[in-house]
Image (cartoon, rainbow over all chains, first blue to last red; front, side, top):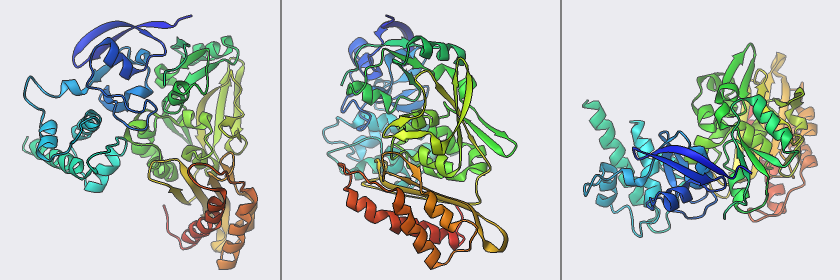
Length: 163
Length: 288
């Protein structure tokens, strides 16, 4: 039985050649095999969105993808955002707006909003809530998260316009 | 929440996928978007011997094509693609509108139309769209292809008429009716529907309505068409009495479940109200 699969995957710019069990989902692979524990695992059934990562630029829930499916893919996790001690502008916006309390859901929001910001569009607060609806937060009540993402999208769009 | 062991098969062509399904004698499952399948594997609601991952087959299964009056949507077309497709926007606006009620951003980036239909969720939005848009589902085996009208496709709760060795390859939509409306009541947005209703019809001569279809989700073990209700509206102009009569007839197909989301009585209460509302909106000529 072909229960183990050899994959080559680029994670945060680094190429990894790994042997994975067929049934292992991508979040467990990132955490247990690569030691990238920034991707959090909440519900493991696609509801909470904690484990959101980017695969080929698209936000996906890594508990709903098999590690084997990452073969040949470009993966970005929350570890890709900060450079040394310098926060990414989105992370800084979360800090400035007090958009986290316990912080467990934060990687999910950061990665979902990272994909969103790359579209370069300004969005209204309702649209932002729609786009973030796949990540749950039990602390903040979401208002400050929406503030942070709104400010970040505005700043990103402005920076683009200034060229 | 860890899946039981299985063999992972990644075919490079549709033919290889069909062969793999046949080789596993009904014990394999097709992995498309995986947004329903992987949770089910994690909960061990099923233990297939193999997963046949069709995500490498986008060349054969991932296209949206306009062929004359028909629109063919490949089984592997993802919700996010339907959301942004200009072809769908022009030809199947109802399908595009309905997609936003499915899952969330991450789920829509992965989930596929073929996967949704094969999953046969009684509250499935894609299923409802296919029913009211009179879609034909194309299934293939190593022996050949067959066309299944959407109205004959759903066999029960999470069950379709697909054979284990059959692969859903495409959905064919005829020219869409001029007027379509959709309504969904859920406990919260993006949750499974408590009730969903879609209606479609075209305006013929002298204001008579033709090709009337009314689809209901969440009120039986499968999404289905309220045929008697549609028949009462077909070829007629509608006034309040016709619409009220049709809304009452829609109850004929309702056998609502009691579950964590809503009681049967509440679902039954909602059906005629929302069928009536959508029909009135159509009659008032609001287009969507």
